[in-house]
Length: 185
Image (cartoon, rainbow, N blue to C red; front, side):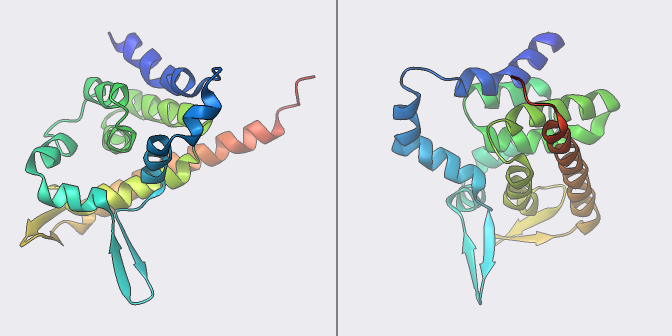
């Protein structure tokens, strides 16, 4: 079962984004663009003197069922795989961030999974955007009071950000290795 999950998680980007006769049509599809935009979007952003909050951030605040999906008591690779199958990539990446520190085996699996998606997305940006979308309402980190997250455990939030930075370092190493590979002729 574990090997199947590895195959699903690592090969899914290749299956999903492989070239097909209609791939150009898919890329121009409005739903696809919206989906890709969501991955590139932070949950909130401060611009000049304004705070801009995304639809995803609003959804998390307002939908308790969705919050339960995003913040289970125990994150699992089975749940992560299900999110990927349902094309809920941003929540799947959030699960990977939370699974990463569990064990050396989980670290390797999270890094491999993220690197598989690096072929399709700028995963350093996606992971940071994912962190800044979901971390503020994580029950381990904050309490939502009157629709506003109040951070009660900045130490846990800081640890999760440290884990994201570690994964991003693996992405940078991977990119460097890819640049140094001799071109296939």
